[in-house]
Structure formats: structure tokens, C-alpha cells
Length: 498
Image (cartoon, rainbow, N blue to C red; front, side, top):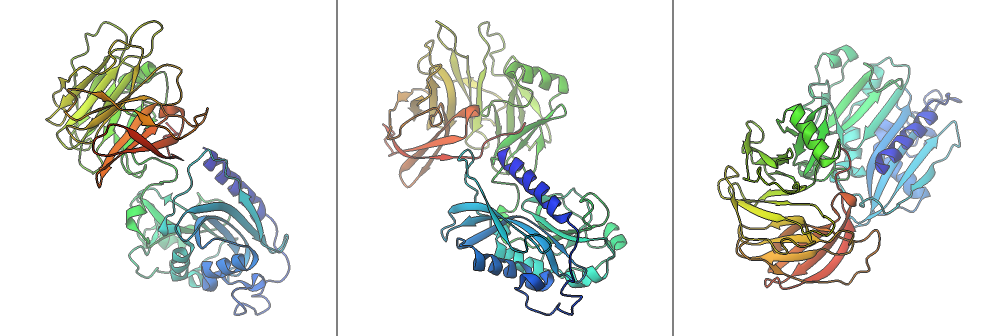
């Protein structure tokens, strides 16, 4: 949310800059369009691209090795001469470690020089992750491929604004000028463009430059250029804003994503059932983060709990068809199962868990269930640890059919959960201590297990804060899994918008 607010503030500031009237004779009026490309007084954007802007910035400011463009907008003349610009850069060292974010602005009619405004890092959000698709070198090459000079001569806009923002996703079938395969961009009239002569958007995230008239991005006086990506594997989704596995509740429907919010699968739940589910969870927008599962690969399993009776809605074909599955606990006559977890280790073998919330003076109930047929049928597993005691189930995660972990926590304890491991498919559980080397406080703590992975003889355990925060703590153990050694803590992207 703070990132979005900062970006909105940047846009408002830019609009104020662009609203200023022109001043003085432009270089083209003085016959200077072929003068020095890298001079602010005579900067030809179609010819100099981003390379010239980068040089101008590095000549004036000390910048790290790698620059990534988050946002850019420039006012240019009909001959492509730069009048004003605004650029937001994420900066990285040679190892792609984030170094900071800054805004740079130039207005020939204003201060007449480039001004830098660093964006404060509050530490509340994860550091941006470098994306080669928006590296300034790559965007420079794509911008130079656009026949901007020819296109400008073919237009009659009241003003000419070139706009770019990272992670742009146009509506499906919106007109574009498509050069994403490395092909030449055609020069079109506005009417040809609107008729789809340059191509149509597929609705996915793309590298987009927009040329518009400065009045409004929603008008017909705009051309969207879809450029070639540098890395197709990281093009889709916004990994700085959304977790890979996510959900959203929108206009009476629930949706799930496996690709950082790039595509969504509708949960096929009647609006009345969804409303009852959200009322049960006590939220209009949020569901427990472990109460749904979506397979990492397309075409697989999607499952989520709904309703007070803890029923499971299941699809084995990416939402093409759905069925309701019972875990056999509908007749449970005691407290509600507010703690719900479901996951799969492959297409057939999965696990689920139900637990009651904390209660004063009473113990918490908790049960585990397992499936070997893709979730169509479930069997209750062995008894979970601390049954009937004041330790609530907060998380469960299986790495294989046999190996898994679960976390338990007492109400009001915000430091570390109690960790149990199993190596026999949940028949028995063994408590394993965490050897902490971290000072816990109101911001740094863990309440649940998030993930368990294995590589080169080492288990990697990540603990998180659930819906309360975005801090993660990482621990490691050898194959014995008899104890967990603290490795690091970090801030992660978590669900933030229903």
C-alpha cells in the first residue's frame, strides 16, 4: 500500500510539472535537432533514448552499477526534443542487491537542472527484486527501436507525452503496436491503430511504452507500443507487489493465482456461500493464508475451505470443474474450526488440518487428514501433539508424503512457535527445538511454519507471522531434523489487498 501511495504521489507531482507552460525557443526552432544528444538543452529523445539520460544522471549523481526503471514520463516536442521528464529508478549493485530508489526530475522551464529526490526506505516493505525486463539498458534498446520520429510527424496531438511504468498490463484485445517478437514497429495513424492494424493485447503483463496527448491516458489519442522482453520467465506478474501464491475477493467472487497475480482462477462458489464464509472468518476481504492451495504448475489442483462446516471445494483441472469434499467433521459439536490448512506434495498426495481457536481455561482440538487420490477422499491421521492443551495449531507443511512439520503457539506469545516434525506420514510427531540467535521484539517474531524445503542434505524451514506481518525467519537442520539453527530474517511480499 505504501508503495502504491508513493507511486501515486509521484504521478501527481509529474502532472504538476507537465502542466507548466512552454518557454523560450526550442532547439528545433533554432535548427538544433542534430546538436549534442546528451545535452539537456538539446536532447533528442528518439535518438538518445535512455542511454543519454543515464549518462546525464551519472555525470551529476553517484549511482550504483545497475539501474532499473520503475516509472518514466517525458514531454517532448513534435520533433522529439526533450522539454521535461520524470524518472523513478531502483538501483542495484553488481550482485543485484538493492541499494535504494530515487526520483529524478527535469524541467527546462523550471529549475533548468535535474533534481534528485531519494525515496525513504522505511523497512516496512521487502527490498525490490531486480527484473531484467526493466533494466535501463534493455529499455534503451527497445525505445530506440520505436520509430518515434516518424510517428510524431504522422500525428497531430496538442502535446506529446511518452510514458512508461513497470509491470503494465493492458486489457485483453486493446489495440497495440506490437514489436514484442523483435519485429519492426509500423508507423500508423490513430484510426489505423484503433482498428487494430498494429495488433491486439493478449491481456498479459508486457514491456509497454505509451505515447499520448497529455490530456488523459484513457483517451483515444494514445499509442501503446509492446516491446520485446529481456526475460520471459520474470515478465508476468509483479513480484515486488504480490506473493506468488495469492487470492482476492472481488464483487462476490473469490479468485486464486499461482503467478504473482498475472492470471486468476475463479473459485466457483455461490455468492451466498462466499458471504457466509467471509462472515465466519470475520473479514470481507481476507481468508486464512493456509486455507487454500493452488498447484505450482498450470492445469493442476485448486482447493479451499469454505463455510462454518469446514467443507473443501476442490478442482483437479485448474477450475474447469469443481466438487465439494467433506473431511467428515460436519457433526463436530464443539467449537468451530477456525484454523484450516490444506496442501499437496504432488498431484495425488495431500494433507489438511483443522484446529480450534484459543479458549480461556480450555484446550485446543486439532486434527490432520491425508489423501492419496488427489483430494477426492480423506482419512484422519494419527493424533496431533498437545491435543486438548492450550497450544493452538498455527501451521502445517509437508515436503513429501512422509516428511512434514507443524507449528503450535500459545495465545499472546509472540516470539517462536513450538515446532514438531514427522517422518512417517504423520503417524508420530517429535518436538524439535529452534536454536535462536536473534533478539525478538514487537516487529520480529514468528507464529507459524510457512515452508519446508530440502537440498544437498539440508532442510530449510521458514517461519512467518501469518496475517499479522511480513517478517520471515529462516532456520536449517541436517537430515536428522533434531534441531533448527537460525540463519537469517528478512521481509517478504505478503498478501495485502483482498
